[in-house]
Image (cartoon, rainbow, N blue to C red):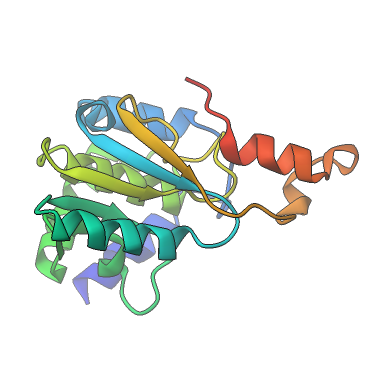
Length: 187
């Protein structure tokens, strides 16, 4: 119940569900001590197959004896699915503590739901500096909250097709522009 109340508050922090920009996530992460700069990550971008590819890589890395953190979106049944650390999903109580800590530091500043969840992941992931982080990009990638990593070990590009055209200007609704948005970094 407490977890759902926090998530409801997160949903109210920004008037839009999606607002493609890196300013809010960068600001919150700065206030959190820039945890995204302390993690080693493999980013997964594309239209289809990101989660399946993450799960395959995760399986291989675990079998090799490596500890992983995994961040995917959306979840299927429970928000906990998005938050895997040291090869285990966080339990509700751990998520509540994590979310309350980040929520307090955010101090009601506007931030989208996905952005604050991503900041929560980075904050927790920084507590496991030796783990490999497998991170699924959200909408496009160039202005996605997951695209602020300093130690991105690799980017895995899954299949890309025409999607999310409503986010592009009419004259830029092409596969080339979608590929650009999904594979570009601003750093």
